[in-house]
Image (tube, rainbow, N blue to C red; front, side):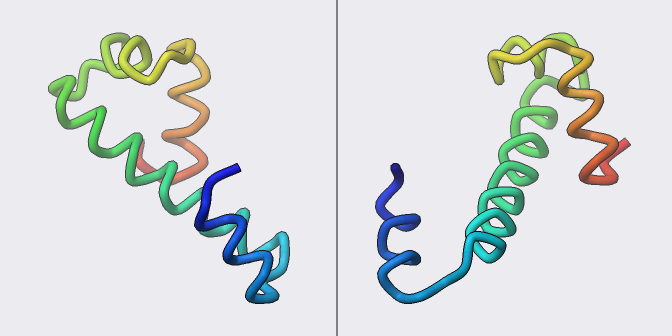
Length: 65
């Protein structure tokens, strides 16, 4: 578990707050990697260690497509 998650639990944040924070960081990660890949989704997916279809799902979820 990441230290920020542990401290958030100790500070009384709910699971929903933690999930929101994780998704926010995940969106930023996807944006950065996609930019580094020159918008090449196949390359970005490889860099993230996920399937291209999973990346497309994340892009749609985060309204990045």
